[in-house]
Length: 214
Image (tube, rainbow, N blue to C red; front, top):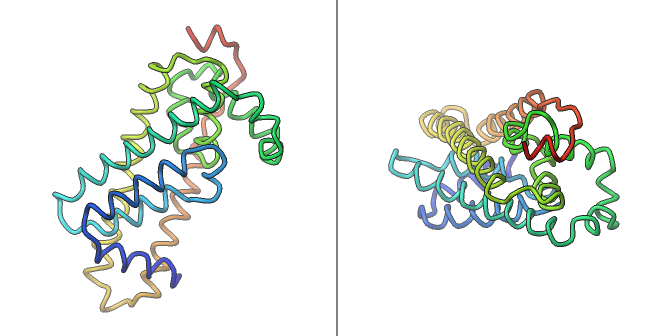
């Protein structure tokens, strides 16, 4: 809790350019293969949103979050395109579990098509594996990028908005509730959004590559 309060306090004292840079770097790393397990990109966007103090600061934050997410996912796509099978069967890939790889494969090949692909952005771990599999299976990059762009815009806007709402509430009432409780509120917000993303996970049946391209 103290760490969260400290990060929020630090972000609040930074210029918008610094916050944007932090968010973009974290999202490029977070949406690259496996590193999404270590760097909570959604938590970073929530905290960055909580640092927003004016309406003018919100669009640039969303813009850099979208750009960071797309750059990271493009990196995952290229990784899969060139070295997909090796990555999947590497030591790190095996540690993720074949079940998770098959789950991501269903999202890429499933009958839900692009909507399932876009929905994977909201599912922990899947948003790191799906770009790799999309590249491995040679999904047309333009199609991949179009759906991921839609997902990144919705994801970045919603998380930044939630963070901004919570942050402004805490600033307005911080003198009453204190940093410890503020940290708890942020932690609960983060936990709830993660839980809802899991509850909203699309259940896709396995399909064929021909169905996916169609």
